[in-house]
Amino acid sequence: MKEAEKTILITGGAGFIGSNLCDYFLSKGHQVICLDNFATGHRHNLKDFINNKNFRLIEGDIRNLVDCQNAVKGVDYVLHQAALGSVPRSINDPITTNDVNVSGFLNMLVASRDANIKRFVYAASSSTYGDSEGLPKVEEVIGKPLSPYAITKYVNELYAEIFSRTYGLETIGLRYFNVFGRKQDPKGAYAAVIPKFVMQLMQLESPKINGDGNYSRDFTYIDNVIQMNELAMTTQNPAAVNTVYNTAYGDRNTLNNLVDYLKDYLSEFNPKIADVAIAYGPNRVGDIPHSLASIDKAKVLLGYEPKYSLQEGLKEAVNWYWENLTP
Image (cartoon, rainbow, N blue to C red; front, side, top):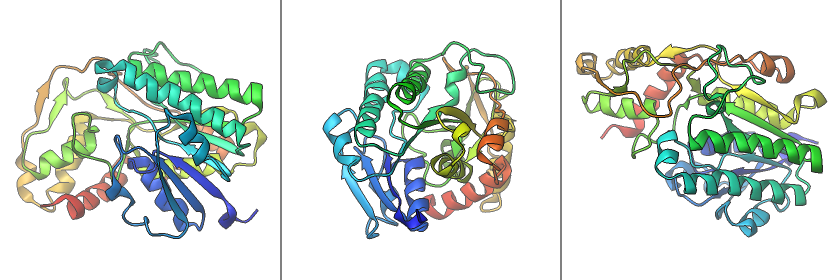
């Protein structure tokens, strides 16, 4: 089958990761369908390709089985990105997080099974490692979840495994580690740390770090995530399917490191940014202290080779934010 003949459904396609996936697979000549209810996604994320003849937008909700069934018609592959992210949001409203992330996920699995989808690739999460203290994180060793969000993402993996075993639906889960990059929303109560810090620094405001800044993360640039989704979707290796993979760079940096890099790169646009002070607050409930992925499994089974380190990705992201968010 030639590349251009694939029809790909991307749920949550108006979100940060989803819209980047839409953009990429359209650029490769595929047919792309986006299912989104715009609860957290944005129409402006679609503006570069909304009129592309190979793109179709379906406004719908994964909590509605009929919407899921309509979206999978004629589809070869599903890249399931739709979810309510954020640990704090799940702590504040566990019911809605569960409805979207568990019931919605199950709806998509059922619809995909019934439509004979070739493969169902879904966004899993590094939060699944929970209170497991070992580093680096290896796929087969997890702890107890530390938040309602983490529970929902672990349940996704359990359901995917059951659908693979019971119904023969090929599934691959990608445990995302702190993804960042272009189109990531800096606004709102649950904004991710990198775009939030970038926006604050651009406005010469002090970024607030939860804790002393020594918590560490495996920050993962969006183009590495796109690579993993493509590899997961296209692999012909039978040993590579019906499992989960860490989706990361395989290195960790503290939040203090992160802010130093951001100040360095942003001060090239505005030297005053170098002098902005950092504010510190209490640790956030449900946060994992340290996160570092082993990416050996993805390298061996999928041929994954991440191209962007944190520093390389931040330079790209900072340029994008400065061009697109400067007043």
